Image (cartoon, one colour):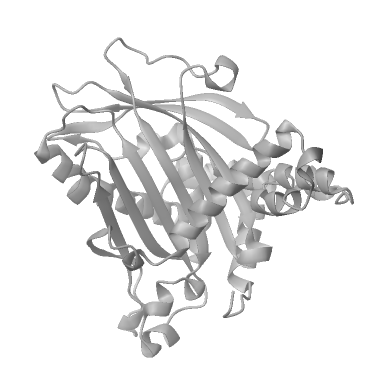
Length: 348
């Protein structure tokens, strides 16, 4: 899972967001980029003549295109892509005792690369109560506390071995190095992750987080080589989007009765991740374990811990919210309210 992406949401609330929006489109694009409105920054810079763009503007445009692609993929209903195989559904949102229609399901889809038999893409779509969004983001954001909640398995031996924060830039960005333990004779896997967030609520009712893998030497030499001679650097590529559930393609596939029964404050969290563990060969039993047990277990644990945080049961995570409430989490909560109240036309 991506680390500390939540801090991206905050950039600009005490800097770029408090400054007057520049009239010049180049400056305006940079302003929106620093305020983590990356897609909006891209739309502004697309109106500028190519000859006027500097390398930094091309970088913004490329990142905006990558985020746009992620959003389009995750806004589409998974059943529209026949390559997805549905793994199943699990209940995720608390059910009203009076109304069984308030039960909502997390759906998990996957596809395996047939040529290699080891490259996996999975997608999770999970409706959650709006009151769960801040705790959920806190759990993902507080990377130092990952070892307190991430599941580990003894049969087969698999789980988080270590996590290290490599860089914190202001309040907003973080690069982390994760190391995962795998069953013998497979060597440990590492992955260096960076997240790019985009607040596109005002335009399209979406918050997006793009997750990328960094390689050795990236970020001006910040990313070190693998720790041990046997460690292998894996690759992850994907991200998340948050949108109002009623405006999602999944909700619009429901029957009229089911749709009318939906709560207005439900948020759909959608995640897609491509994983290349860099295996020349992987045991079928391990593949089945990851697909059929580990993915669902990890997501279920994430939601369970978020509920514990909301109810004050996870002291360290709850304390993290309180310690950063004025500078971070109050702002996030405000953004969630904007997401709930956002009105998007049927045509859009």
